[in-house]
Image (cartoon, rainbow, N blue to C red; front, side, top):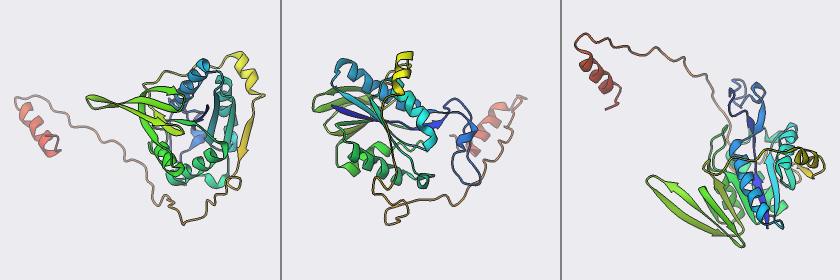
Amino acid sequence: MKIVVLVKEVPDTYGDRKLSLETGLANRAASDAVIDEIGERALELALSHVDKNPDAEVVVLSMAPATAQATLRKALAMGAGSAVQVADERLLGADLGLTAEVLAAALQRTGFDLVIAGNLSTDGSGGVIPAMIAELLGVPSATALSDVEINPGKVSGVRSLDGATMAVSATLPAVISITEALPDARLPNFKGIMAAKRKPLETLSLADLSIDAEDHSASRSIVIGLSETAPRAAGLKITDEGNAGERLAEFLIQNRFV
């Protein structure tokens, strides 16, 4: 079985995240770059399957700048067998549609039985890429899974809903996305770090995938306006002088909280 895990390099999840007011894009130089935590959990799911099924293969795939090879090497150090990186300057600021198109094309080129992704990145927070990729590839998808079981020819899992759970399954090949309910990722050990230096890391361009980023026949979006959030105003302070309850009720009604 060939499992491809989608990973994304993002600004440090626990650091400051800022937008460039000139470009409207994330200012990725404002903090350290790391693999998105949900992507690491997706990789852990794949590696846990390989632990029990040594004949399975894990490939990590990322659409990222050329400078992102260090984060992909970390994924290899964690245990992935190989990595594929799509790096092209024309992908700077790519929208969800173009991102899904590029990743789908890379998956077709690489081949897969199962694609595992996180349900929501910490920078873009689109939450739709796995489903869009499945649609482009014409394969079933099972999204936002809080529990996953991988079997020959089939993947199944549980999706949590408000007050209930839903059991879902799909025949392979398929695309799934997981939530933070899945286990934390393992840490790379020294042996893995040294082995990662020798593992294959293929870099692809848009030309390799036969994609024209300038082709507007498909939907493409751009930022047309951007401004900083207004400073937070001081809140209303109510001092009880016998009428605090009435003033609080008036405040809630005026702001449509009740």
